Image 1 (tube, rainbow, N blue to C red):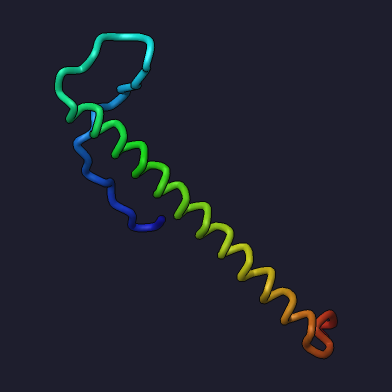
Image 2: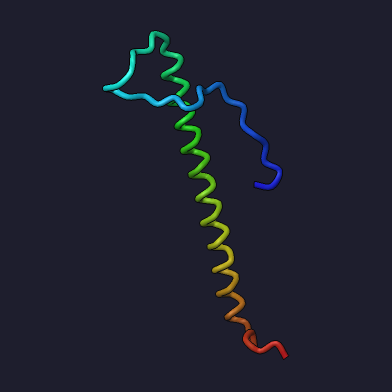
Length: 76
């Protein structure tokens, strides 16, 4: 994430939706903003996890390939 920039968003910070507590919101835009923000956060987290898995897998594959080279264990 070197060089990553903040994502501009129009979400309401700290808003939680509950089916049982609080007053109803008359403007459906607030509901949409909370849902969109949650979906965006989940998507970004999924991308980060998949990138990490790919990175680890790459090194595992390279380590296996290096192990196949003759005299890979001796560096004399």
